[in-house]
Image 1 (cartoon, rainbow, N blue to C red):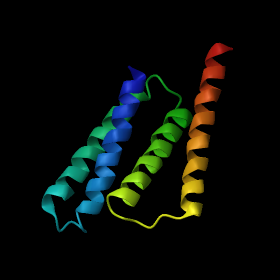
Image 2: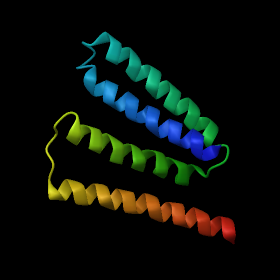
Image 3: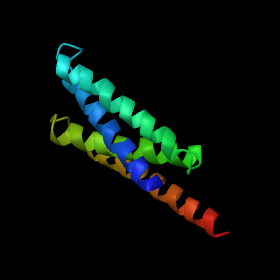
Image 4: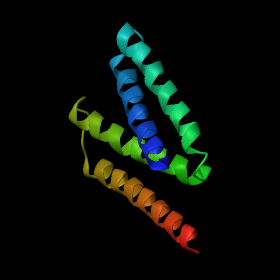
Length: 110
């Protein structure tokens, strides 16, 4: 269940970040309202996920996956520029998330 909560937190954070861009500086009222709705859900669910995760681990997963997914949305949906440096940087973040996951597995087996 903890992974479900963390996943919902990440996905609603993605929704909030995407709506933040779509709000166009609060000129789009629906996207502006959805920004707060998605971020509120994200933080609320994340708080429940923290009952079963270490803060440093869960926050790194939440933020790292959020960066990855927001970057993908930005490059594909919003047509943001793509560069090799940007892709490598995102892959380094993903590698860090994977290593944190491995460290959590090792901690739980010892």
